[in-house]
Every structure is written in structure tokens, then in C-alpha cells.
Image (cartoon, rainbow, N blue to C red):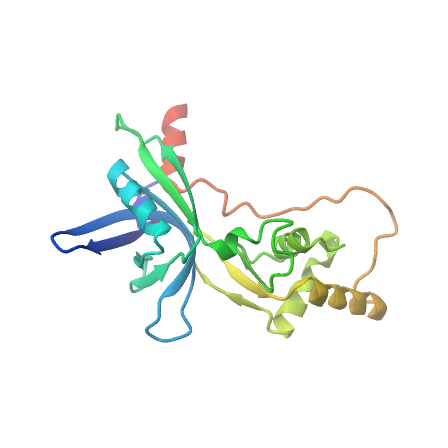
Length: 234
């Protein structure tokens, strides 16, 4: 775990009132950012996982709830002004840290758009933000969200369709390789129907359960938690 801190980014938040200025700075281990279309615009922060103390996390929970502007610094990149936007969701927890009596506090902020991509939610949506660009993962999440009849073997075909139709593009990520996919249920059903007629994909002859082999890179323990687990077992 040497130099594990170099794989973290940082988040800074500044709040100015009439009499005081409050500055908060914490480490982040996961992030999904969508750059602004305008050169000087603010990015959309679809996901930020941050670690800090009680006061820092409390202040950032309030900042996320207010859709405040945050400064995100990722390794090797200039600072990115970003906001999770209105109606963002927050999830709080604790992280045990070796050598410290009090645990660190963990806050995950999720944009309203990312929250709507879970299965069965907002099936009329035309964009899906995903935390990984693996072809099997992309097909699985799109199929789960829209209730599409697919099998894992179609993943390479589906990814080719997305690329050829320019319906997928990369986002900025920390600890993951996020993408955004454009299209809705009707669009993808048309693709599937056409591909079946042309023979580009085939329905399996045998009936049975389907097993998806999905990447787990996003769910791997970040450096801080991995170090905590290692110390607990030695």
C-alpha cells in the first residue's frame, strides 16, 4: 500500500458569509464527472465518494444538499469546478482507520440523474450514466434498467452498435472508467430486432438461467479501506 495516497483526489469547498469564510478539504477515492459543454462551465458530479472528519463531512453533506459548487482535484489533472446538481442523494457511513481511535466519516453523493438509472426507475430516460465501460457491464445495466430481453453473449455486438452510432462516450473518473450511454428502451429494442433479422445476434437454443460475469473494479476496496482490512488480519 506504499504511496496509496497518490491514488486519491481531493475535494475543496468554500462558503463565504457576511462575517466568515469556511473552507473544507477532504480526500476522495471515487468520482464520476461529466465535463461541461462550455469551456468555463461547471462539470456535473454524478458520483463523489469522500472521506473526512465529522465536521468536514457534515459541511459537505449540507453543501451537496444545496447543490453547491465544489472544486475537484484528480491526480494529474487541473482543478474541476463541479456540482452534483439539485435533488442529489447522500449516503453516510464510517471508516475504521488504523492508529486512530475515532473512525473517519464517509460520504457518497449521487446525482439525481445517476440515481434514476437503477433498474425499473425512469424507463423513459434517454441517458444512462455508468461507472464502468466493460461491454458486459454496459449491456447488463442497460438491460436491467429498461427490461430488455438480452443474453451476455450479445455484449460485444451491443458495444459495437453503441460506438458506431456514437451513442456512448467516456466521462472523467477516479477509481473507475465511467461512460454515458444515449438511447431509450424503444431505441434498443429496434437495434435488437434488426440484429436478430440480419443474423448479427442469435437467441440461444437452450433454455436456462443466465450468468453474467461482471467486472468488480468499482467495488474493490479503495487504498484506505484495503489497508484497514489488511491490518485487521495481521
